[in-house]
Structures are given as C-alpha cells and as structure tokens.
Picture 1: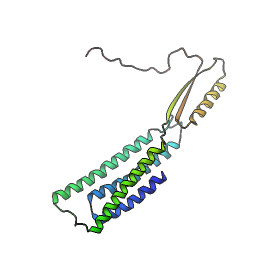
Picture 2: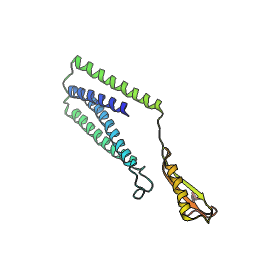
Picture 3: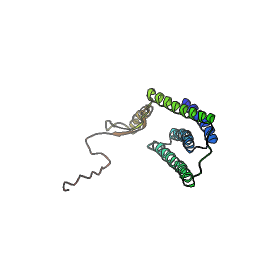
Picture 4: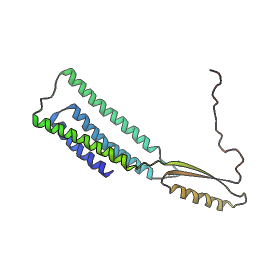
Amino acid sequence: MKISNYANATLLALKIYVTVRSGSIAVAASTLDSLLDFMAVGILWLTHLAMKDINMYKYPIGKLRVQPIGIIIFAAVMATLGFQVFITAVQQVIENNPYEKMSSDELVWLYSITIFAALVKLALWIYCRSSGNTIVRAYADVYIELPEDVPLKEAHAIGESLQVKLEKLAEVERAFVHLDFEYEHKTEHSVLRKKPDSHP
C-alpha cells in the first residue's frame, strides 16, 4: 500500500506539472486518473476503518457491505469528473480553439513523463500480481447438537466460545452458532422456492 501511495503521489505531481505547461486535455485526463487513484485508496481506507468498528447489536452480520457502498461512491465521482473532461474536449473541438504549440523541450518533458507514468503503472501491476495477497471474508453458519439435559448456561458458553474462535480466523467475517438438542426436525426458517414453470 505504501509503495502504491508513493508512486501515485509522484505521478500526480509530475502530471500536474505537465498539464499546466501543456494544457493538453489528454494529459489532464491522465492527471485525473492519478487523482482518482488517491481517492480510491482513501475510500478503501475509510471503509476498512468502518468495517473494523464492530457493533454486533447495530450490525449483527457485520459491515461487509460498507466496501461496495464506497466503490459505488467512487464510481459516481469518477464518472462525473470523466464527463467533465469529455465536455471540455467537445467544447474545444466546437470552438476550434487549440492550445499553443509546444516547444521541443516541452514535448520531450511531456513524452518522458507519460512514458515514465506508464512504466510505473506496469511495475505496480506486476508487483500486485506477484504478491498474491487476496483476502476473502465470509459468513460462517455452524450447527451444534447438544444433549437436551445440558444446562442453558453451559450451552451458551459452548456456543459463544466457538463463535469467538471462528471469528478470529482471517477468512471469517461473522460466525453464527446455532445450538439444538436434535437435528432431524426441519429448519427454523422457511425457504420459499419457486419451481420453474414446465410450460413455455
């Protein structure tokens, strides 16, 4: 994460410089891409903090859905800014008002920074692919059959201790432990299943 942040900060500073010097819409779009990278990191960091703040009474199944909400917000911002760049480019085409021609030195700076940005992005992609650091968290439903004469206090202690151990696992977001004295009866929750119509 730190490597990505440092790389994005460097790229953003260089792209801002080239955008100001060249006035190129293409470079501005690339600068926007680097800015959105920072926004994505910030949103993921905030959602991560929100998911760590566990309140089993307000959020009994955890806050796993907080991250998709953050992604939706980021996508909306990205679409809005991208559309603004598109409108600016269309206006330049309609008004036929191009920017002043760049000098040879400015073109060298532009090409050098653009190529450098592409190489940094490629290096980050290779690094992320090789790290193999993929985390998937899921819910865990566990059913325990206990003798019917087990005291409630003891049964509760057994279920709670198992829940705590399961939720310490890195791949488990939330564990649900169900206690019962027999397993042959139907499940407590009725599940409606709609059979497909046999007639077309």
